[in-house]
Length: 285
Image (cartoon, rainbow, N blue to C red; front, side, top):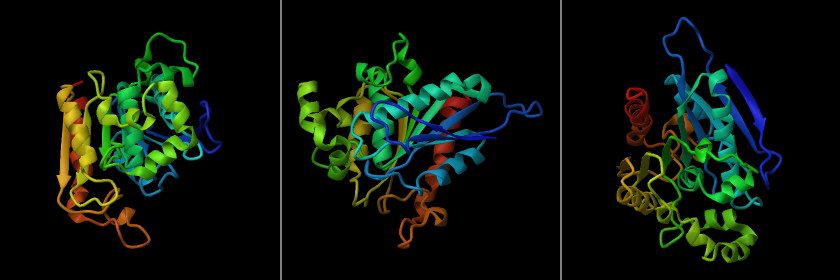
């Protein structure tokens, strides 16, 4: 296994920013030549990155036979688009090493939980924008090197409107919100309200949420699913009837110290995501 840590030095990156890889060894005895890779973006309100939503999820996808990676992206005081540039940098790194790591370069999937879901979805809608290439000093003509092939969004932060998780947007934009709004010619919070940014180039998505999520209301996912539908982007969505915010695997492996984040009926999301990857990418390749 190539278990390594790659420091990221995008514009504005903090010293801890890194990509941790879990790349399965190639074997001539095994029929599988190249595997999908699932790149995990933990949540934490753009204030920190959760351990519960990091390696435990990566290990599940590793056990399914996929490669995995975890992005420990820069959070506050870093501001938009630093974390987004770091995720784009990570996708590019994987593609550049695809042959050596035996990754299928057309099967790179970003997974994000909560604010990490906002980050994953941000790359899904912004991958071809000028500011992403500029943040990485990328002068190549083909920006698809940054595009994820799919998105798995777990109770994601999406909207900055009525159903916003306002703390995430406060940390994401920080003290530069006014300057960014002036640069964009529109309110920065509206720009990073992702249901307004979906287009034909947005990759397919698997999304799940709970009806009773009190931290990030389920309307975040519903708004994004509606936008995907209007853009004719394939999506699979599961809404569970019960469950607090931040469930991760929803079983004892990601149970928090307070005894929360245990919801048996929600544990099925990981197997449903497995089926989605197989049908969307592996069996159709």
